Amino acid sequence: MTQGLFDIKDSDANGRIGNFRVPRSNVIVETPAFLPVINPKLQTISPSELASKFNVQILITNSYIIRQTDHLHHAAIENGLHKLLDFPGAIMTDSGSFQLAEYGSVDVTTSEIIHFQNAIGSDIATPLDIPTPPDVSYEVAKLDLQTTSERLELSKTLVENDMLISAPIQGSTHIDLREKAASDAYALGFDVFPVGAAVPLLTQYRFQDVVNIIMATKRGLGLDAIVHLFGAGHPMMFALAVAAGCDLFDSAAYALYARRGSYLTTEGTKQLLEMDHFPCHCPICSTYTPSELRDLSPNKCESLLAEHNLYVSLSEINKIKVAIKEGSLLELVELRSRSHPAMLDGCKALFRHSIQLEKQDPAVKGTFFHTSDLSHYRPEIIRHHKNLSRFRIGKNVLLTTNTSSSILSNYGEVWYVKPPFGPFPIGLSHTYPLTAEIPNHIDINALQQAVAGISTLVSLHPQTTFTFAHENWPQLILETLPDAVKLINLSS
View 1: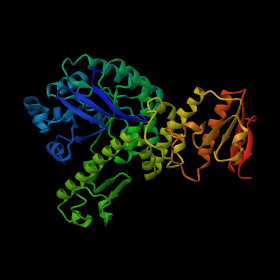
View 2: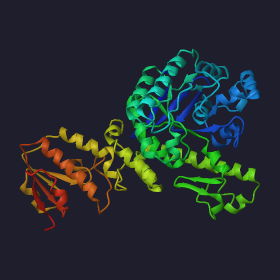
View 3: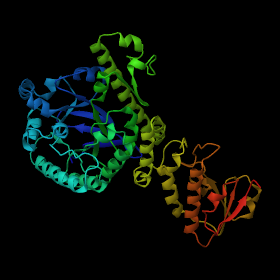
View 4: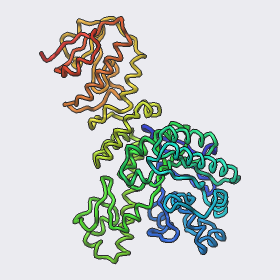
């Protein structure tokens, strides 16, 4: 990987705000970043408008289409890609792999497409990989991955200047293949690591599978690796993907959805024909009503609807950056998880990887807000339970949910129990994350997590006598405690 390519400024879970240096165009792209896809034959919003009107720093276009279209080919070779598109920022180019997935073959080799991308001045080139679809057999995925790996190795030898090169990570839905592919590509020193062939999963709303392959890819990469989720165009899932570890997204959805009259929101997709009011206050939605937009010419309506879709996508990226800075990214993910059942599945899948998330999650943030029945699976709870091994403890310890109880003086040491974290010394009550804001009526899963923390503490100190003073905790939960723990119901 190019040294000094990525400077991480802030992080939360696996999400990060960073500066991505693109040397060929001398541009610094702040991540997370959304790369609008530009069809060189059909531009719904021109690249110059993307830069001037939307402050887009980086976009992606298809080098295979340019190569196979005579007038575009000639203009790109003669004048360069940036002049062809009239875009001052960084430009990433795809290789024709999408066409390969759609049509079964392309009329180009790996060497030819890499040399062409270099010749036209691409900032970030992409080799011709094999985009293996989901759910194929392990044998097929492994054979396709072998071909992709050979092409990646070849492409690495073809570039000698400052053009960056990406390494699409394939492996279908086979998690071990994704992790190995990422590890092998990282060892070869590529610059950007796109998670490939995710579009079929995204279009089917299989966000659980998307999360699992992103997390597998992250396990195979170093911390400085820039991860790109190919084809992720719906703002509903951006926060989830960033929390899993994605830094870049690209999609033509802003334009394709507009073409069929679809209006994007962070909660899902609406049809313009069915709308009486706009829930957004972007420049388009604050200027037109739905009926006024429908009354425009089809081309004008499509163009403005595409602008709205782009505004809402870029706005969500900014909200994610704010959340990372504040340390509230996972709370934003929980909020977005309520927009669709498949998003809820995706959020649950993310939190099943909390042990992995905890390794990069900052130890200190703002206030922890327990906002849903998923909050108790967050990495902060995992870390707290791990940190219990660092404490020295007395021989006669009271664990209590009420520190104002009159029985405190009967014990040599008193620890507070706060769901979902469990036990901690009272002196840490004003430290993160134990300052957490939690609902008055906590759900049973949070109580289970607290009891798991108690059990961990007890196992670490077999010579200590523990008493747990609770306030009507369910018997079903209490029965999971070690037998040696004495129980007092403070509400009796």
